[in-house]
Image (cartoon, rainbow, N blue to C red; front, side, top):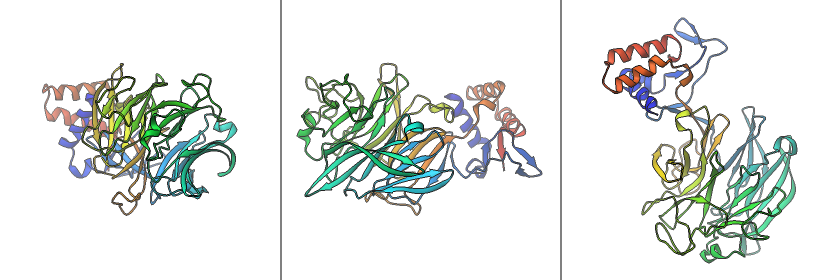
Length: 424
């Protein structure tokens, strides 16, 4: 959105640096008392602004133990897993431990969680986690019933999924079709990814009770797609199209268009290599390493200029990858956001009030800050609904060189006067 860029440039050029980086915010109906902001409608802003992206980032929770997955209840509660075996809830601003499980080590542990689409009525929570059995490591998917922020095991949907100290997959999400999708890694044995009689190296699709949907691509099989190495991100656009992320072997990380019954090539092909019957990625990292994890399309009013983009949390790359697709899912452009700003990123999810990002700096491969790991919330830095059309025109004319900086400054002063832009 050109307007966003113009506004940002205007702020950087015309507002003092001390104001642009932390002492201003967009607001609505805020009362001014002398030189202070006051009144019951006051918005307290403790977020870090990123004017070049026209967003702000606030910390929802910190000092966590490798947060991995997050989901949202309609009553406002936020549930999230920590890889070390803990399920937590944030309820009315208060964080509480819901459950702890003995889990396998390495890159395994308590991984994906998902709330049932009918959670408001049935209170089902699904958890995918790694466990040790004798001398082997495996993964299981269990359905629990939640009551007053505590869980009771209800049903084991899958167990014995091949696991290891790495390549366990672990992302679980309900699709727009109401089916539960599960990503599994190759558990260190690449050949399992090509075997349809193994659940390793796959994206699985099941009903919420663990049964096999009749329209799955392979009869009596939970396998939806195969030939995956270590997929950790899945997300659907508004049309119901599924995009997945996948770790490559040291490089050639992938963004894939996931379709029923397709073979995504591991370990036979990587990157742009081709082979009959195998599907190439929409985008790959080439010789670079992103280590992509959670992925999500964003649709929402909180960040309108990011609507329709696909976001990917990158671990090794330490960035949030933003991808634009055209109507045929060709990659129009992609951009690395917040590069190195928050360290390793494990998950990104479109939430009810913005875009949520989970960091992963405590996983043994990052450089933790004093308050890592964290859950971050990204929202817009401005209120587009409050900007008059004539102000939008002035920003456009300034970009085109038709008006001066003085005219632009008048527009900014108007925004301040009308309490659209608040300056402390």
